[in-house]
Length: 136
Image 1 (cartoon, one colour):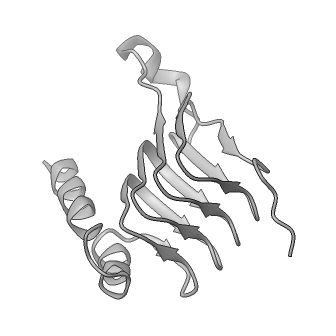
Image 2: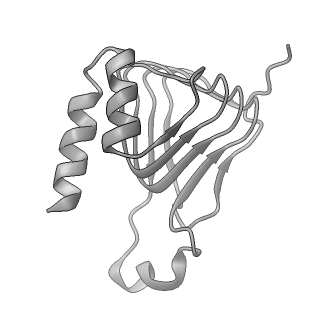
């Protein structure tokens, strides 16, 4: 039941303007979001979200299937992306994840451009690092 409430709250918050969405993310969902970070109209379904300085998630993205999503300083997810962890069979689910669970890590200054469908293993080793490094 708690999961259903979190998902409902997360989906509902995705429709709010950023100033109100940030309050819901920080206070209700307990996400760690820097003051300079930004999330557009996107659906983020994870237990934990950390957005570093100047991290940005554009509009119309879906990020799901992860226990934690960590975006380091100046990392970016463009618009119109679907990023999800691959489903694990019930037999594989135990022992496949590390201590932190399923973690998506977008490294400092790495970016996912627009219009991608990315389905990753979700076994605790998914890192989007330097997909496109931006200079400046």
